[in-house]
Image (cartoon, rainbow, N blue to C red; front, side):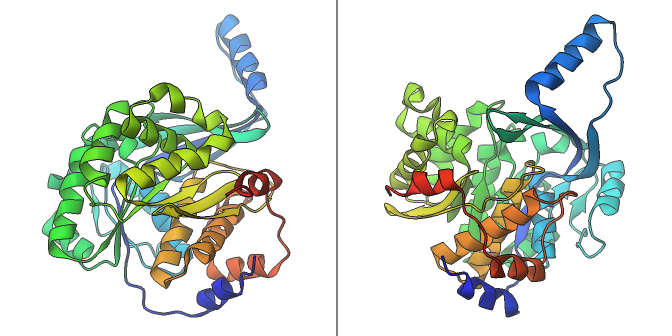
Length: 366
């Protein structure tokens, strides 16, 4: 792996335009714990005694939501993203306090409801996982009709529009179809979609796959191993075959490859051990960097931001993956869930970074 091309691209500062990111903002409250079983036992003890307080756990309040996290990461990477989200007045005030003052908030709608998540970070089966408990708020009902002429003008002037966090939205397929159909009919803007975990909203998966992705409305479909299993099940109808995919890393590429083959979409695929870009049965895959993982919630958003930057820089698949993996690695190893700058990325890539042994083994047969 030679990161020279990526470093050269990061040192240059071409005009890349303003990618548009929508539509969710969450207030995230992190609880940083050790092993899952230890936390469960502590909570059970409190319940059995009639209530009480567990101490000794780290807490962190920060900006949340796939869209805000991705926009924040893009801002740190030197871009000026256009963020379109819906919340209420309190949410807008909290958003201003939780993001950089440099982030443009002129497209924040305040006629909705606050969305909030408690993210419990624990150790389970040898890896850090985040367990999220959410109030979806306005993320559940954002629709194409919420977009103003001011929003649509910004979208059509963007080089790329990213629709994220569809897993909370009850009418996600209609939102995606309406938005991307408008973009296709009026511009050459690239369309990027990342559904998120649909386990609590499974009815959106099949229409997203068949009425949006398969219809050529999406240029790049971002996903992780869990989302790949959902899409694969929806496309070939074999739920039993793909149900346990997230627990079996050897099946991850097969699921993503099936989705790309059947829909024709490019899959930009991120997992804890490797990342890949899959299109027309061609797979480019690289192991992720081996770093101490301190936080996992938002890792996919950081990876997507690096991927989007790589797309706008015109990098090929391998270099785009190196860039996205680097952004995610620096993020997950940060004590404060901070997104990296271009300068931090360059310094990271100059070093001799270890790669995931598991990831290297998984992609070796490809």
